[in-house]
Image (tube, rainbow, N blue to C red):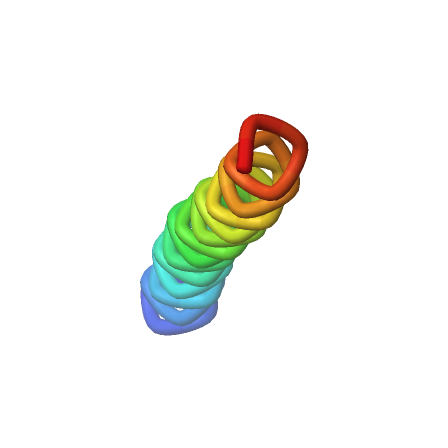
Length: 50
């Protein structure tokens, strides 16, 4: 029983770690998309002024 418990614990820890890593990755992805959008709109604005 103890062995089964510890393996379940391990799986839960891995799942939590995976979720955290996934969330981190999605935030990085989102922020890079936002940055690219800002760069594009900055280019667009500079074209309008020029």
